[in-house]
Image (tube, rainbow, N blue to C red; front, side):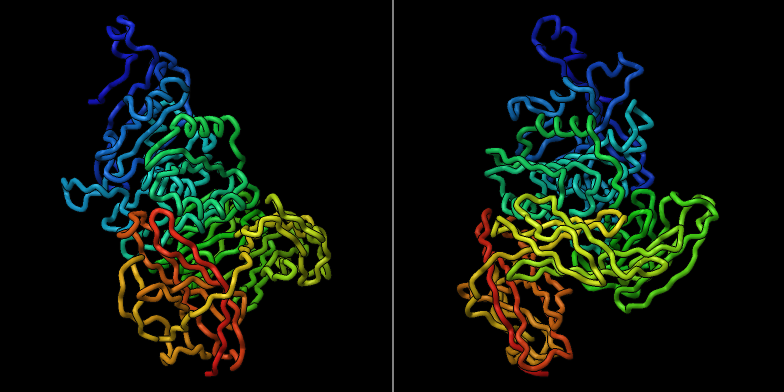
Length: 614
């Protein structure tokens, strides 16, 4: 039986004059989930006029609760943001009572055995059961749309959530941008292990910004929140890569301050939704997935990401990686990719497939199927695929790097058309404030460079927009590194055993790197870099564009027991090329964090490693 609440139903209260404003009608319901194979609970907040306005339909916000909560119960020992006087009455029921919107709270409980009262929801960090909550989301949406009078277009659907639910809100919206047009996040965790139980993968919002083409996003920070340091680090990236991202900080601890302001953000998004992007990107932790009408299937059974980039009617780039953004490629994985049904059935299209790893170029003509889809079978290498109706030249940017003194974006082009052209004109711009491009238009013959300056010396990311001829404009995100002093006292770890900090504040005798443990970098070895920090050493994250160092491997040191966030510190493993000559000096930018919860201390600097020999 549904449970109904709200002043609108308590007529004798209204007659007594003690219900000054209408509130939402609340139903606590269940449905049978085929995805989970069990009954699942959910709560629905309906506007007061829902029963009377029988011809009216409403947009929907899906709200995901946090740790220790349920669909109908507030955090244990925390404040109620569904109803009541907490937060000064600024809650979901009050907002729905004043607006034409439906809010659905799903049930994130993930018991490991029948009847268990387990406080950790969503089956993330650790992945303990077979439930995959992102895969359940489309089923819940279909059930709500069939049972209630909803507006069923993606433009009228949103996600929101608190803490672990804030993480889920962003993850779900980024996985299904074709189902959701806006996403908000109240102080959500920045990183968790997610995905299939047999091969979970590290999912970090800092690196997932490309999944949000066509979405408006918002994150709420708290000046007293224990996660705030990670939120600010994330916004240093999202502020310059996501044009429709916003954040607001409240004088608050962990919770949902300004609920009405965030729900108003979604109402504004419903009124002014972003269109489907003409060019988009997507990375997914699941071997099989669908997005924007495209479908991908693979035989991957190890942790990793399938990555689609620069997807449009003119082509795409694909790869499979252990991690983002530049983890080791999983070359043995086989992909089956089907495009959206946007091509003419039976018509043959010129296909150019360039393997960026081997340089091999394959050209063919492929007919669209009866539904208007094109089909591709590729491996996990980086494939640049061009699609054309006619025999025309086409190009894309196959590689780039940022050089300093002065700042330059060095571009390398790749022909993806059925034939090549001698030169192509590139128009380069940046949507970021404080970025000035000296030569925004340049003629390229395979390669070229863009000279630019940035006003902010601490800027960590710049986004460029590149248009080649008449092709679609696509983005390049270029990391920047501040001028920093050289780091003194570092050690090269090539299998060296010494006391290292792990889990933020625990000391352990262990070795890092792979080599002869003489503390020197030699060709063929894999090294880590450690900095002295009191009684032990702290391994660091490294960055370089030197071809002698392969940084595709990275370790994560979990800090959850220390700061209760679920995030990790990153440690780079640099493999020195077998052919790197003795005496070569590899410049690195190094970054590491000193535990100081909740305001950790970020250390940055430069260092140079001299290759000693083989």
